[in-house]
Length: 426
Image (tube, rainbow, N blue to C red):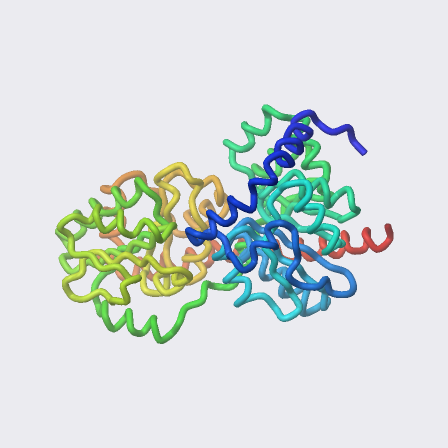
């Protein structure tokens, strides 16, 4: 066993010292809807289900996006191999989504808080044979504890931002100790692979993004038809997954477009639905309706705020093109494959490091996509609204660009089988 880094010793001591305050913190978070009160024991490592017999493959994803990315791998493991699967995540939304979408022989639990006692209790009960951590949600006590118990670990769909990479470089011994617990790291692209190698991952390979193999976002057909009937032939400017600072750019672009297209409907889907009130205030004198109030856009609605969960697939089906948020502000950009898979062309700002390969492939196929300002968004949107054939061709090109990025699911399955075999031999 490698000698513990001083940073990890300090972290373990601090997390143990703070453990008595965790139940109070969980109650406070439950009061504002950020924890499931009925399942709070899981956050302390107390399982609410029995461990199934046989080998157990454990997936961990921080929230909805990571869990959804892992679903194709989970479905193939449970169907073809009939493996037992445990999925952990940390948010209420991801738990609700997993309860709806997990196969019958897969179990969801909330991830334990990263204290020594909670993680030890969790690992002692579940005894996972293989653990697959999606993206880069690194919890030191949980990871090192699992490794010490003999769980074979992999970091899958792995990515790390430049900011996180530079931060970890200030604690090289600590991050190397954490990352050396992983038998393999499957990075999304060359840039992420180089960063993980530099930080101390012993076996780094490039697999592509699991999101490239995910099925298209679902949509309720009845709701889709109701929206289409309400909108009719009006042109649409869709801004999806927006953050503060982006709505302030989208709304001026809307105003510019309305001069040429007075019937334009702008649909804003905020990344965090609790921001709907702020967006409504930003709209000022513009006629605005919020979807959470159970209303559809009418003929007078200028801006429709889609502040509901799990309905993004509706809006990508309605629009011929979409601005993808988290890209005009330095958030790394949200998933451009979701609109592209639905033949919706993609527009985005320059901050796309989280999915750089996907944006590059889609933009190259389309022949456009990068914008920096309200004027550029307005100009490109006006071109696509005025020329329906070009917009349709761009949507088809986006689909083809996204299709070139597949293959990560099969590579992840192969790595999982290798790890299961290694665990059995051990």
